[in-house]
Image 1 (spheres, helix red, strand yellow):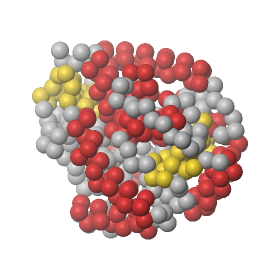
Image 2 (image 1 turned 60 degrees about the vertical axis):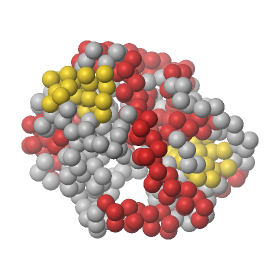
Image 3 (image 1 turned 180 degrees about the horizontal axis):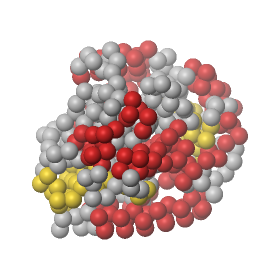
Image 4 (image 1 turned 90 degrees about the vertical axis):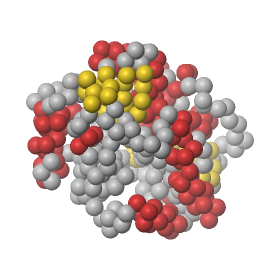
Amino acid sequence: MKKIGIMSMQRIANYGSFLQAFALKQLLLQMGDEVEFVDYHVQKPVLTDSSENSGSFVRKIIKGMDALKIRSSFYQKIQFISFKQSFKKKYLPLLGVSKTMNYTPYLDCLIIGSDEVFNCIQKNSNVGYSLELFGENNNAKRLISYAASFGNTTVEKLQKYHKDEEISILLKNFDQISVRDKNSFNIVKKLTGKEPLCHLDPVLIYDYMNSCKLIPKIKVKERFLILYAYSGRITEKEARWISSYAQEKGLKIYAIGGIHQYCDRFINCSPFEVLAYFNNADEVITDTFHGTIFSVITHRKFATIIRKSLEEEYGNEEKLTDLLERLQLDCRIAHKIENIRGINSEDIDYVKVNEIIASERKRALQYLSNTV
């Protein structure tokens, strides 16, 4: 039995981070390995703003105040704040993650990934700029990544902030690198001179809907549409359009993951209940990577809003366009909110999509089996 460590975004309080971490752990457990999550020391982010410089406690207050500014019901705001405050306490134990940090354990193999573990040019002080996410100071016999992503960090940004050389040196120390998107592929190739392998996110590789017994059965009497996006990312114009669209179709709007204007409900639930809600939704509108994946594995009609990265503002175009193209679902891309009506009027050939995922599962499992 091998002792395997996973260094990921397992302590970040959102559903995608949790479910990808849980999925990768389950895949390794199925192979008969002993698995533990490994922590990294969070350093100051490369990009900063006033809220990120204020310290953890003050930052939480600022984020909470931002949520209160969103024009949704007071009850939904309280639900959202409760969701953010209780997430780690409620759900990290389900991953086997405790309050005690697990730094640099001795391992047979350390896997860095999945999620945006390589996204180092960003503002999030919960992640920061940590070279440990690139394998620095690890105590593992082997070092690999699985479906790692640079997010919207690009070669140009690495060069601009003079991080390309040190990242290049660390990447060259990996025994094998696996990424999940074209942007990350290009960065690794540029900095190492070698082509990494590409694999799908663990949420697509682990067969959640048939294998995970923690997903409950739920019954919802009303028909609903899921709006899955982080708070503050849906504009006033988009929120109004979605509200009108849902009313035309006789659907309630369930907000999951964030609160938004004009939604009928904010759903405060477990990560596994999220998949149950998706499985019962009439439609999904999202602008997130994992919201798209949740839609795919539950075979929903969905539209994904693509946002461009402008200056230092966060976009989703790099990872989401690549994901949808690989699944041959780029027809679900909405470059503007009005596109959604036409997109969600079209059915999805999930037989074809499932064939792609089945093929990718074989590749991913073979990679993990051969490299850990």
